[in-house]
Amino acid sequence: MLEGIALHHGYDFRDYAPGPLRRNILMSMALEGVPTISAYQDRVLHDPASLQRFLNTVGVNVTSMFREALALRALREEIVPWLRTFPSVRIWVAGCATGEEVASLAIVLRETGMLGRTRIYATDINEASLAIAARGLLPLETVQSGEADYRRSGGRGALTDYYAVVGDMARLDRTLLSGVTWARHNLISDASFNDFHVILCTNVLTHFSRRLHMQVQQLLYDSLVRSGYLIVGRLESVIRWGNLGVYNRVRESSGVYRKGAA
Image 1 (spheres, one colour):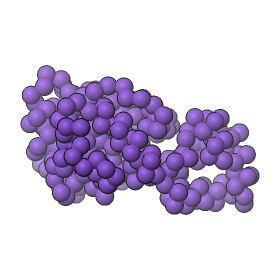
Image 2 (cartoon, one colour):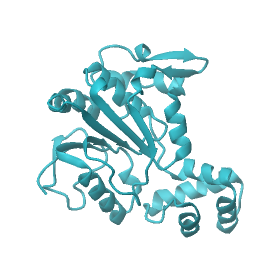
Image 3 (cartoon, one colour):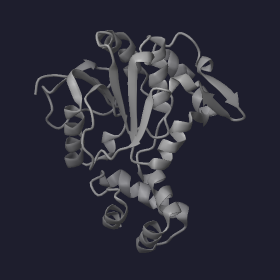
C-alpha cells in the first residue's frame, strides 16, 4: 500500500518509524470502516477524499499554540539578539501542519520587534493543512488552551491581543501572517530551497526511521546559515545518531541547537 501511495500520489511513508505508522494505519482503517489492508489500499489509491483522510491521520499533523514554550523562550532571549545583527531574516517552519506553530512564532517575533524584517517560510506535505493554515482561522479552544504556554515562552501580554473571536473560531490578526510564504514541501524527497537563520522542525523527526531521520537532518543542516539555529521538539535529538559536534545544544531543557563546524 505504501509503495502504491508513493508511486501514484508522491507521498512516501515507506521509511517512517514502523510502530507509530502501523498504529496510524490501523486507526485510519477503523475510521474508514474497511476490514482489510487490500481494501483500504484500493480506496486510498482511487478516492481522493480517502487519501486526504489518510494524510490527516498518518502524516505528521499534531500541533498546538506555543507547544514548545521553552524553545520559544530561548528564541526570545538568545536567538533574537543574534538575529538583530542582520538587515533581514529568513525562518523556515518545516512541517507546519495547520499553522499553530507559525502563529506562535509570529507572535514572539512581533513582541521582540523582529516580525517586520523576517520572512517566514511555512511548509508541509499536506496541502489541505496548508490551506487551513493560510486562512489564519484557528479553533478558539485551541488558541485559548495555549495561554499558559504563551506565558512560559516569555509572553508578557495576552493571546487575546492577537485574535478576534468569530463564533467558535479565532481569527488571527492579519499582520501576523502577512510575511509568511506557504508552500508544499516534502522533507523526504525535496531539496533545500534557501539558506535560513532559524529552522523549526518540531515533533517531525520522531516519526521517521533512523535512515530517514539522518537524511532529513542533513537537509536541515544544509539549509542553515553558518551559526544558524535549529529548533526541534524537546523530546527529539539531533545528536542521537552521530551528529555530535555538528550542533551545540543551547539549552538542555529545550530542543534548541546551534550549527557548528562540520
